[in-house]
Length: 74
Image 1 (cartoon, helix red, strand yellow):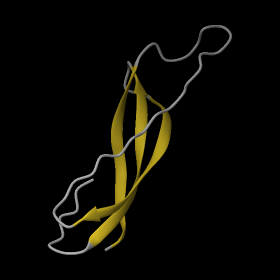
Image 2 (cartoon, one colour):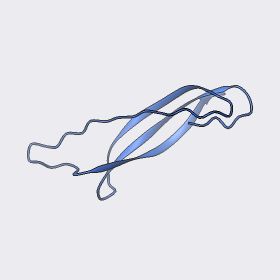
Image 3 (cartoon, helix red, strand yellow):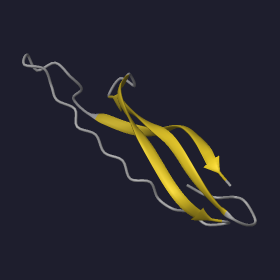
């Protein structure tokens, strides 16, 4: 997350969406980054566990993409 302000620190919350090989969303995760100084960038880590059904149904591969992100404070 990048704090584009010229002063102060900011915290951010957001979501990451997991999509399958067809582009269909099959899950999501929350992200949170706090204490990002003005003009600085800090990474957000995310992970998810998705299990296939007993009959093998489920995504064969996937990607993640950033969803909505919002500033909590400034």
